[in-house]
Image 1 (cartoon, each protein chain N blue to C red):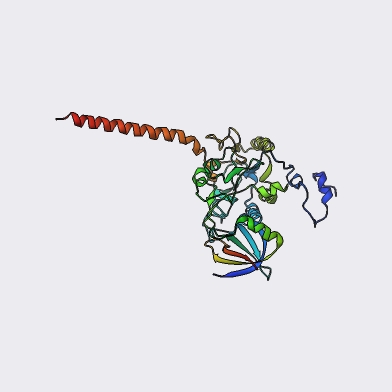
Image 2: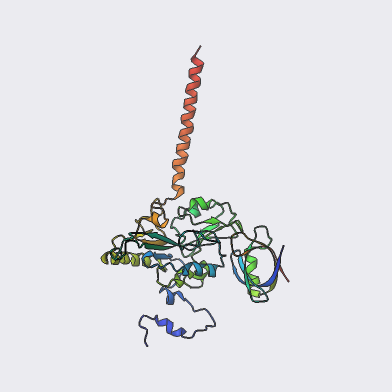
Length: 72
Length: 304
């Protein structure tokens, strides 16, 4: 699965925006199968911690499905 | 130049770049102070909607919702299609000839009229989705709005058929029910909901429900006086849309045509009101069939 690194800049419910090193923002939705919960997103957004997202493509939406989220 | 209609508090914030949130900002933008324990909602006046979709964009931006339904819908200028798990505001474009109103006499025969309406969750007073939810994920907030708690929703989808307006949808991405929160997070921060704040014509008005209902009634009277007799309210107490035990809708509309034209049900009802009649009719059917079977068996026993 593809991976992307960056900083979480917006967190809303199970959705978050990841801004990569080039300053490009990408929208992710937490997969129901992943270990992270909605409540884990806000502390990551507030601390601006660099994270790595393992994701899959989502059908018929401009966004990705986050399968794994880890601090780096 | 003096701006006569400027709120007195606006003078305190004359600079463009602010280092903090303006306290109770909704007082400046919507003329209402947001306080817990009061009822808030939307009054959508469809007669001034220009179909700009600023509300759709503002909603997606604030709530970080992904663009969906990619491609052409083939439905006029409507590219979102309907309310969904990722679209919490939907601007309906209804193209029809003889739309009625003051422009009816000046339109050429080949021209059509447009009815536009920004649809949204109605935040019903007696919310059927909330009644159907088995986990309590749907709840009434301190602002009398209806919100789904994402960490409690188990994705059963009972709320989806319960909603008479077809608002709630279970997301295919995360398997949970999603709908408009009436910007619950913004309300808690004293901010007007994003859609209402972005509306350039004030078609979407946010405020305290009693104030909005009074304002809407005055607007209907005004439109009637201006020669638009078809104007009426949908979702206020006693009006269409507030039928079948719904009491009233916190997000109500001013319409100029039948509700079905805007894809709204003419007489929505709470499914919970049909539980007792369904149960009793089911029991009566079982009792009737039992009696019929007993009669037939007794008849066959009697035959030699």
